[in-house]
Length: 269
Image 1 (cartoon, rainbow, N blue to C red):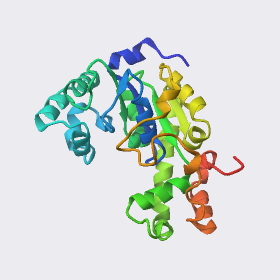
Image 2 (cartoon, rainbow, N blue to C red; image 1 turned 180 degrees about the vertical axis):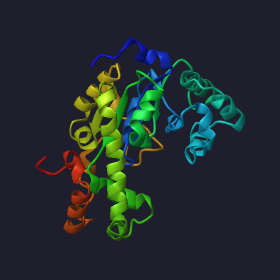
Image 3 (cartoon, one colour; image 1 turned 135 degrees about the horizontal axis):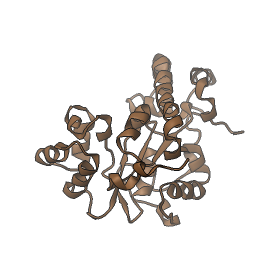
Image 4 (spheres, helix red, strand yellow; image 1 turned 135 degrees about the vertical axis):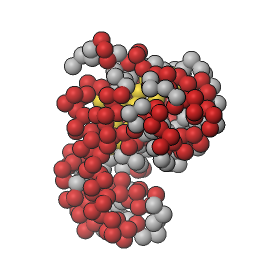
């Protein structure tokens, strides 16, 4: 489906792309790879588009506080950034005021995982801007979520105690994605974490082409304070739950997310 003239991404310059998806599905990995492109940059995470206007952002917590910290902006900077109803103006001020962004002529991308849950509303706010949605097998995600919550010693127990909430969380994000497809499918690229790990160059070439950008193999190697699993893509993270979660819990996770069975990943997939 071709984009209409009224949906030109140029109207939202300097924002070039949105990155969203499940937390721990590779959004940070993709963030670091995209930042290697000479025309792109980002201050790690956004969240502005969770509101109807930039003026709403100060009330959207913890995203506002986290954004200010990661993009290294003062209270006065944030007042200026949010004092507009125009998203292009908001992002332009972010680029101009943030010391994280060295090249003031670059284009920005906004990496905010939770956008996936509200994808239709988010995409409506920045017409024409493409979005990459990251997904991952729920067993791997739920193990990461449990460890992220501080339960590394016995993640299975924590998952058992929170299984219903975790499955609902997984499904809520998926439903946000599926709800956006009928209207915005031409602007959405689904990136499976497992596909990226198995054939990173091919998958990244497709992602960069979708964004209208060229890809170089050197982009696969980066230095990051945020991505904690090294400085490149690896197949080591395909099955982190094996030997950690019991077969019973794994099957319960798959059953609870059966609505998204196409995202379940197995050795025979």
